[in-house]
Length: 348
Image 1 (cartoon, rainbow, N blue to C red):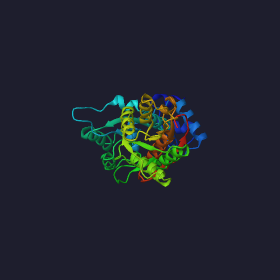
Image 2 (image 1 turned 45 degrees about the vertical axis):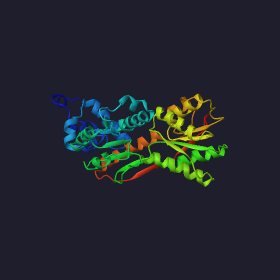
Image 3 (image 1 turned 135 degrees about the vertical axis):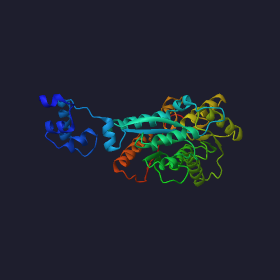
Image 4 (image 1 turned 90 degrees about the vertical axis):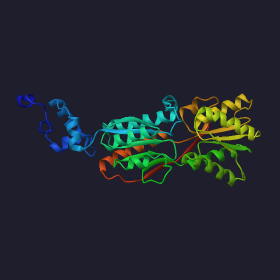
């Protein structure tokens, strides 16, 4: 490196001179922009190493109006008075780990970093909205667990790109990804009926949540098309314990039950526990089908037959959509719906 380059901190112009390209090209490479030929990127990165250039993120943020971060927001229903959000329960649910892990993997190649935030009451929702509105993040990836969540609409009001996991409970113009929940439940119903089940039941999620409602309605629709006019159901809240409680209630209401569809794998695991405790063999006496194909499904005994929603692919698509909106500057509202598949194991 020349003496001139040693006297001051290297600049983009210095890198451009060494690389033999324009300053604009160096800027695109340094800022992680796509549409730069791999060979050119390699030359620029070699010049960066040769000059010792270090990007000034604060200055770059002033120019690009980018922070290099996105808010990953987990939004839950307000806890009971006097209670706080149970973070241990959130992290114990394999669904959230799969989603957040996929965000990290999808964002990392673009030098964009997630800031994990939780919102479960008015105060924490205000904090999230303020954080995004005042430019601390380039946008938000929102995972909401209740239908009346005001955050999708409030985040839209910040003017920052927002992408939601699952169709919002309210009609708001926000981009989202989802799985065809009703179609997945139809797969479960037809599978149980094809294996000879005659008395069906459902453990649903909270029916005010669109995904849970779609799964219940999809199952009942498929059953009705094959002559089952009524399918009893009990609501759970997607936890192992609620699956246990709901299964006990369902057995009491329909003792002759021989096929159960459960709206997620954690509840299905709880349902199997209760069935076994009651002396019902799974799947010989009662077949069980879950939903998600989470790690729980393969770890359970018996291993769960389940409807797979491709969570990792869905989360990666959310990140891609958000980065696209950030780059375009004019967020386009759109949805991407993934197809479910049935994974047949031992429980049904």
